[in-house]
Image (cartoon, rainbow, N blue to C red; front, top):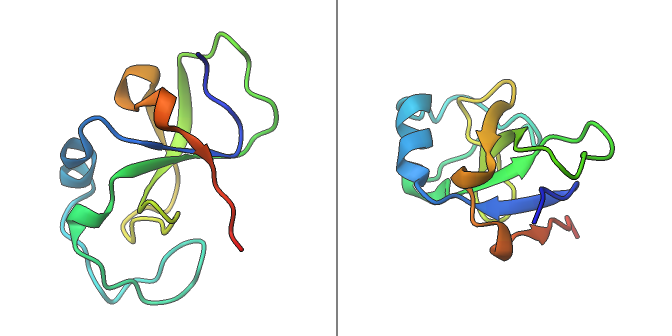
Length: 99
């Protein structure tokens, strides 16, 4: 099962990514929403694929933002990072809809 464009996936080990991003500064604003984000680091458990167009079926890595399950981007991220198929739970991925 490949990555699918527009999807958000639960991370298998979210702590690894959150730790690499460092301590959250609540004075920063989210990249996508431009509002202060006051959530604990433990809330960032998903990877939202960066959109570059269609994803090749054989892609084993893709750029993604570390987010909450609702798509709120970790405030320490100013650009996506590379994730691997093994970093996410593909079968639990879903299309992110911002209603």
